[in-house]
Image (cartoon, rainbow, N blue to C red; front, side, top):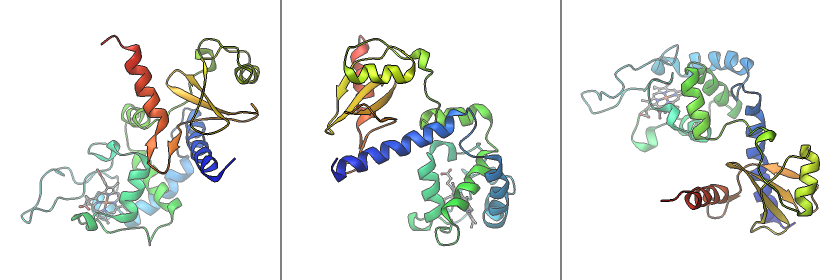
Length: 228
Ligand code: HEC
């Protein structure tokens, strides 16, 4: 396999990891992370965002100089519109370089500490809001294997079927990557190596163009299956 293909596969594996993590119906973080996150947050963030990430209540109201106050991170403002990577980036880079006032934390806090801080303020989000966020950004659990769809005779499918306990699968399609095949499972994709030995679940990203190829297909398929 060439390097480009392996990079793509690796990114698919990351997506898989994120999904498997979420599969235990729990949130993406552990109670331990929230506990450590509380310390990180109270030391570094609470002065502006509040002890419970609840400040500022009137976050849409700029001050006399036109400067916006820190928004609450407890789910009542905007933070849930961003995926995990954007949240991480906002904390690493701060807002100053975009004309805001939040200082960057990339030098002060490790990636682990930043994740802990996020887990702390996300632990304040109501369950339904967290679920909406998780669904938007596909931090979701995998479909149950019983839900997996219809049949096809290809060897890869049969092998996968054996692995999955004889569920029926949708048709297998080639991808732009040599030796990598795709099976659609509802709105998710399983990618298989030609030899049928390895399978990953997730989205295929073209790192060169930044395009999410799975998302493209998903849209396409949805558009095709709708009458108008
Ligand atoms: C000096 C005050 C201050 C500190 C300290 C601070 N922030 Fe902020 N934060 C802000 C402000 C103000 C904004 C709005 C953007 C801007 O003006 O930079 C913001 C924005 C954010 C956002 C984006 C929210 C959204 O709705 O898009 C996140 C996430 C965030 N902060 C997390 C943190 C975390 C985590 C820490 C601690 C590691 C922290 N902030 C420390 C003031 C602060």
